[in-house]
Amino acid sequence: MHKRRLPGRRPLLLAVGAGATVAALAAGMTSAFAATVFTDDFNDGNTSGWSKSGGTWTVDGSGVLNQSNAGSSLARQFAGQTSWTNYTVQARVRPVSFGSSSALVGLAARSSSSTKMYRLALLGSGRAELQAVNGSSITAIGSASLGIGTGSWYTLRIETSGSTIRGFVNGTQIAAGSNSLVGAGRIGLVTAYASGGFDDVAVDSSGSGTPTTPPPTTPGPTNPPPAGWPTPTSSQKVDATIPVSGTFDGGLKRYYGIGDGGQSESQDPMFELAAGATLRNVIIGAPAGDGVHCEGNCTLINVWWEDVGEDAATFRGGTTYTVDGGGARSASDKVFQHNGSGTVHIKNFRVENAGKLYRACGNCSTSYQRHVVIDNVVVRDTDAIAGINTNWGDTARFSRITIVGDPDRDTSICVKYRGVPKGSEPVEIGEGADGINCLYAPSDITYQ
Image (cartoon, rainbow, N blue to C red; front, side, top):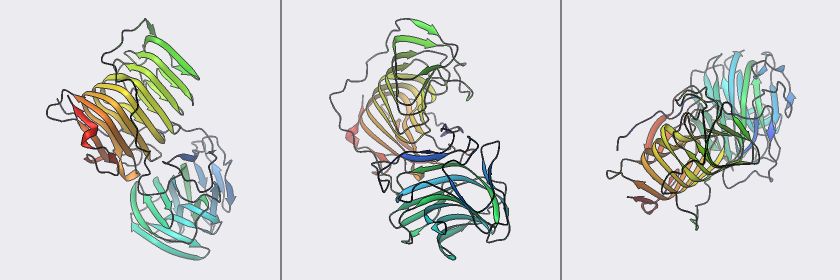
């Protein structure tokens, strides 16, 4: 079998709804795995859902929230719930001007009041510092000299889990420590004697640095992956994306005709599924454009890709996605691309002649913790089954995997990457079971 080592992911913009979106949660925001509970990309042009304290705040035409009063001693925008405890908050932050070396532009978590919070600050001195802030008393949990400058975007992330607080800049941890100043509170965007821009704010409901994984799958009496590829009942050329809400049953008709069959990022999808939609009994022929887009939770049942173009399916929004039955072949890069948050379940599926079956996005604009559960899948002539980003807490769980025609065992089960900010390329850092991110035993993999 010929091994192809492919890039982790091309840059893609995460699709999220315009304006702030908040999901109701039980107090404490605990869950079996990370779920996105708040997002705001400011594309609606306003700060609905935020409360202002100081400063001059406006949303510009490109959907960036700007604080322009560099003379303000403290300018803040707060969102979320005061009861939030363990969570991860992330935002893209761009310093525009610093009034001094101690001036700052930053991100806040667990803001119990306008002056009590944990803060990840980009300082005029060029350092990034994770701080416990209690009025005028500021305790540095840790810091790093990063050469912070004006005009550049930085992805900031704060993880809170009990008394453990961690700070990340551009996917790299710069500080971590134990601090019990505040146990719950809102998120915040902050400047002090500085001006700056903010975008792509997201909150996940697990702040733990150790991945909180979905429970192990319990193999049930499911159907085995099909032994062969189905014969289409008929064929239909498609000239524009087919929107799906509810359930679309194609009766095993072949749909084809979008795009050029290549890897161009500008191609439209064949099907676009609204939140909660189901696509079933469909054969997607070539050219297939960008396959299927799921804008929220979705289910794909007995869907077949005869010749994957850009991607077979991209999971863009929502928290739970299911692929049950079907198959895909001839994917030079990957079959399933996971850009949103939550968990993808792939079962009773077959993949042939592909780069990867699954890839968690390694450089999307929002760095979610993502999970995949793969069960009862047949793999042939495929370089890797899954690629995940361990620095973001991604996990991949495997059971009942059958690899065909690989006597040298060249197929990688689980490839690990270091996720990076949008515009950079993820770095491969290893592969194989580790009991933390890549979860499987030798008995879960069968070679034929």
